[in-house]
Image (tube, rainbow, N blue to C red):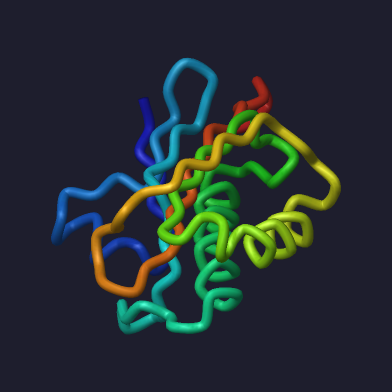
Length: 131
């Protein structure tokens, strides 16, 4: 097993015993990613918050030597699922570059901090040639 900690997530890893990603058995398993700014504050604008969560997903993939096309499964957790689904899909479609792995969207009553509307959890395949 190999822990994946992209630049910028080191403090959260040390402070909260947080594992952004872990490679095991030929797969990268990710912790759910949120839309917070560099100071850790929740981003209020829904599109910007969702975009940032996807940027965090991408940074974990890149730290593991992977890319968007290596994602094999997506689970998302949404506060206000029906309200925010159109903007989520717009951002996701832009990020995913036409790639369409299985996706499960789950509506929840709350996430870890007030104002968060989405948490994105992905699993990616690690090709044999990847480190």
